[in-house]
Length: 366
Image (cartoon, rainbow, N blue to C red; front, side, top):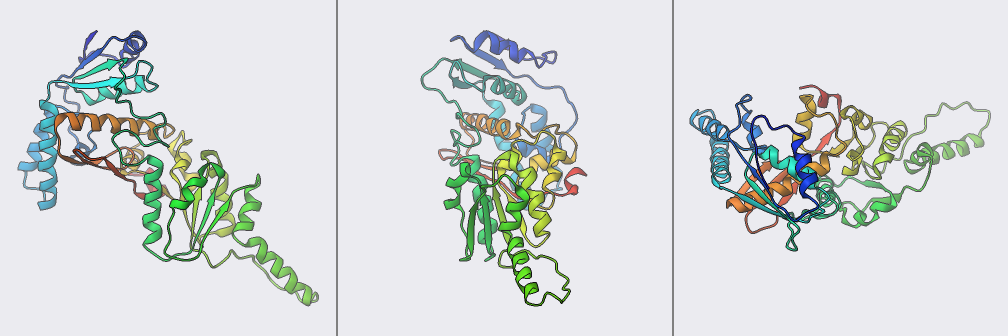
């Protein structure tokens, strides 16, 4: 089956293709064309590797010739130009996918966004399919999973100082505790096993202990009126929270209520999985989250309606991009990816670095 992309092609055609082909062994050919100019990209946007056109290549060359770049930027721009040339010069790319690939619709949509000629072969044993779970599992082509990369990002901030750390985790994420590291001997892991977030937070932060101590002191002299404000424990600096997506909206406010600004709160990437509207991130205000610059830029520009599936779609795009880079013969690429900074090298697994960013109202203003 042959389909040619043109300027009149509507988005829903991808769904029609899928419905007619995904259950058969027929193949799909998606051809690229030179896209109409829809406005020039910002220089940094080219490093997103989201779509490709000859207009992009001309704009990169114009930037190189402008003398506005320093030595490092010029080196990056020349590598970027070389990669775009290789990607655009290839006449066809090939993907081998299972007939009932669970992400078939999403893959076809992402291919159209790339604007490249991609031939999809269905019903093959030698499938290059990404993974069953795009978030928890290691996706083909990557060194580690998105979850593992988030833990690595948290570890980088933890090992830079000797801060004492409290880890609050739920049973489903217990396996990640062993991967967390600290220079300091004070590393306490507590499993969340309550249905009352306020009571749990008061207990784990030492508020209950403070109140009990005050009652004992007051009992020594019941006639003395003592002003008392319960204080959280002072032997901790950071609180790392590794919980299910639904639990953060209650846990973060409860911890802040009892702990105030005494601690640095760091959330696991699971805190983003059920965020259907970027404004919901304000529930995590003043805490730190593994989230890419790409996503926060989209939020600031009000170009992102939902975060609920960005992790899966972002990981899927990056898996697809790796297939393209490998087939194009690209040697190396530094990509400002949807899920983080992607470091691609040929004949090697791809690394990802997810920056930790503080959630604040600044995220919602450019």
